[in-house]
Each structure stands twice: as structure tokens, then as C-alpha cells.
Image 1: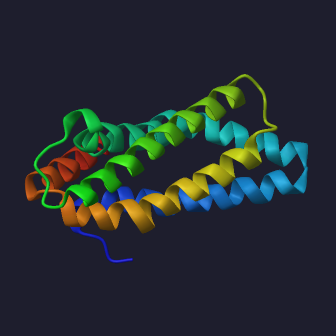
Image 2 (image 1 turned 90 degrees about the vertical axis):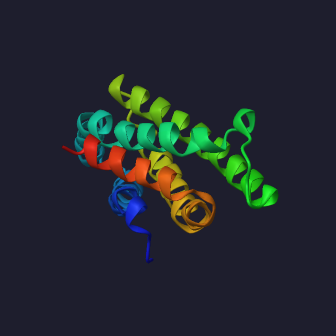
Length: 155
């Protein structure tokens, strides 16, 4: 999917998250405890620097712009409210995935399939629903901020 330059870093990471989601679902379905353990340990290792960083960028530089407590002048209030509702839902899903990560850290690998399913659903919602709306509603200054923060986090 063609994406404005400002959101391309996050979009590329969405491709990675879909790959991880599929791998988590497939691995969980094998019921192979060794493979499940290995993948969970990989997720535990990568999650803070990759996925929590990704979530933080979205939450602080996109979701906050569309919080209901910060209603701004919008070109289309219905569009703004749709984005706001999506951001709220997606932030809740970030928290659930953070909870899954904590469970994995504690040694509960039984949630790997649930983690994968939520990550897949979440990523598709962002790519198919949220990002096209953001491209319509965010100002160039807001998009530039997302790009700048995305680049800085990856240095």
C-alpha cells in the first residue's frame, strides 16, 4: 500500500509485525513447547526496543493528537471522531499486548497464539483504517513530527 513518506517508518514496522504475528500464530498451533519457548524468548528480547518503541511513537505523536480531551479544529468532525475512536481502541490493544509481553516474561508462553492474533488484527487496523485517515486529517507539521520522531528513535 502506498503510504506518505512521513508514515513509512511505522508502515515498514507494520510489515515486520505481520510477519511476527503469523509466526506466533503458526508456532502456537504446532503445540511444540520448544519452538513456542524459543519464539517467546525472542519476543521478550525484542519487544522493549522494537514494539514498545513503536507503540510509544504512535501513542505520543498520533493518538494524543486525536484524544477526545484535545478536540482540535478539524476539517471534518466526523472524520476526527472516527480517528479518535480508532486511536482509543488501538491504545487499549497496545496495553493488552504489553500485558501479554509481561506474561511471557513471567514464563507464561500459553498466550503466544493470542498475542499473534491480536498483533495481526491490530496491525491490519492501523494500516487499512487508521493510516489512510491520518493522511487526510494530519497537518504537514504533524506528519513531519511523526517522521522526525520515527527517524530519531531508530538512530
